[in-house]
Image (cartoon, rainbow, N blue to C red):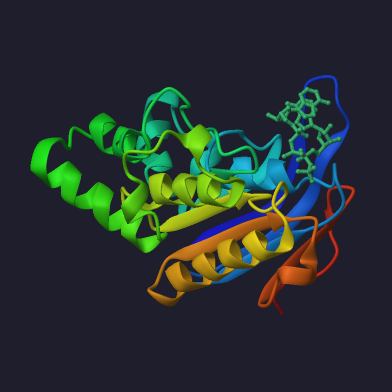
Length: 218
Ligand code: ADP
Ligand code: ADP
């Protein structure tokens, strides 16, 4: 489903964030991307989600080279992905319900259908009774679960999470990782970048200063 072939990423004025990285991820896999801070984990995820382009090498999504697509095509590619960040990126002046409804509004889904889907998403992350709450009234773990509800409400094929438990204590972190496993069990491809491999059970792709040092499939 996702294939990197000798992908190098050099930021303007920077050194190489990724160095000739080659791997493949099949539909339905759960993959952890591990490595120290600055190893290139975020860069790898941004290339997968077509937020950044490779400097050299190819990034294929379902056999389509997404590194060379026209800019206008990128929003369609990005619909395949639900993104989750360490800092949630919630809208703090809107309710939990409205945060989750936003991606649907962008897709033109509104009214009763939107309400149904927002509540289904909130239910999956255990926040159905908090739909009217403002994010600030939620705990850190609840805020991250809200961000996950927003990421899954459009039913993306792939969930991409960048250090989703980085700001959470270990109990909450455990809940969040269990949620990712539960989405994976129903067929969603899940990619989680974490500097803390302790919580990771499954396939690991390990980055060291931009080089993939483990997890290259045979
Ligand atoms: P990680 O997610 O593992 O912490 P990143 O992918 O964020 O690593 O960063 C890898 C390297 O690329 C780091 O040296 C970082 O400073 C650099 N980098 C990341 N984003 C940019 C950018 N937009 N411009 C320049 N350098 C960047
Ligand atoms: P993470 O730890 O998740 O990799 P960072 O805090 O390193 O995130 O980066 C936050 C943002 O700043 C990202 O969008 C990243 O691309 C950008 N960034 C990171 N390092 C640099 C850098 N050296 N120069 C410019 N932008 C950077």
